[in-house]
Image 1 (tube, each protein chain N blue to C red):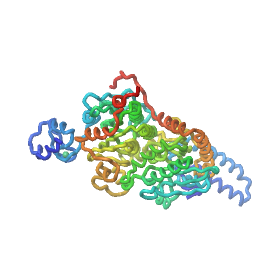
Image 2 (cartoon, rainbow over the protein chains, first blue to last red):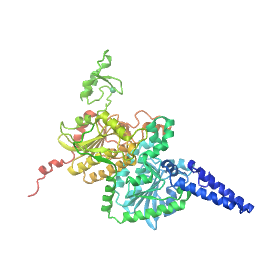
Image 3 (cartoon, rainbow over the protein chains, first blue to last red):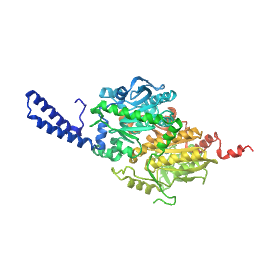
Image 4 (cartoon, chains in turn yellow, red):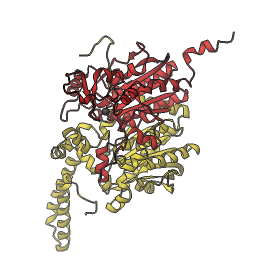
Length: 333
Length: 291
Ligand SMILES: [Zn+2]
């Protein structure tokens, strides 16, 4: 494990070059060799070129890998990194407390805000505790409870989306996973306070949308958001396991799941730039960029009256979708 | 309960040796051989085990609505290919294949019609079309049914069957869950009743949006419903699921369904529910305007 966590396959040439430069520098210092300066400079130019080439042409699948990077900042990193006085609030008051979902009150720029968000772990142990960010009905109901609390006390809501999907377990099913997600979507549609949604990592399907309805929906540059993850999409299409594994990157392309795609589809309002190479390489910059974007969104949504806001929210979602309207006489077949 | 009586009589057509082709149908669940004409008279419910055969949107129209009152709406909406989805098969080709096979243009048929005289706005999923999956057109058709219920101040009925949101329209399919659910807020505000009938199977994106948001949730016996599919759950938990998991009866006992209603009683149950709400068409007769 390197400083930045596991190295993604497509980043290997860059890391190898960086390592060589580092070694040469150390050698040059200890041996007091000025002669290596030219060689080091040449390599630095080469690595800069490689970085530009790789990171400015990321495929959708490469972005999926970056969005899943274990060292990427997660919900609590953002809360702790950009807010003060966080008071975590646990439990759905009905069944239990879902650790795949975090919620509570915090202060952003001195102002109170309610925060809900999927929580992933940084390592296996944490991920087992957090159920890999896959919430059950309890998580969605906890989030709704906190959103209702925010409405009651007139605080805006920030929702941080980062999930590989709602948990497909037997218990989750039995306690109404579908109903919990539907209820959240419905209630978020009429919550009177501003809702800002920020997709910080993975936005997989209904599990993401269950806390994903808002006045401003924003995505980080390398986050992904779609109706299904590339792997199950591939399995459904190709059936055969080997074939499905071979085609998952193509499925990521086919699903058009990047932030740029979603901006074009009118599903999101803005893209937050990430530090070069991804948020995991520089938490501080990533968090600062997210903070700036949230403050701007809060300012915009906060300026509306409640009626204007609810009307605009309905209008926003009403316009989503693509279809043609043909003259009534135009018969099929 | 005609089908029930026949069951009592112990009709056992399996015993017949020679079965003329086309006159008999084998039950998907209990393998009983059923006389086609009788099966149709029984609302396509097996007289032996109560299995509900698939009847498609036409079947529900004739089951639920007063004869000749159904008028289709929004048939002018056409599916497009916003993602230019080409993985395995081009989406437009895939659609054409289903359109040819079913004679339908999309997985939902919408319209207005009467139940015991009461005008309702309705959307009916048809499982024979791409498993009733929801893309932009399905979402828009359901939304327009909601808006029609609002405009005409008439109850909304959705007969659901769906594998979920449609992959080939990506994020736009997912957003149909939000679009429909947000319009249901408006329906609630205007106190217009919304009845959902869950039929086999109703899963994922449709179950996790409007199919879970009815004021009244009825389900057909044995209908599978839920969020994740059975095989995915089994892979997750690493063991097999008990018999009857995720059926309508299962969710009735877990508190997510108001009633499990056999097809034979569906029209009557719907009509009884609607009788609790003012018939806005008759409003003027009942409350003449003050002079
Ligand atoms: Zn049978």
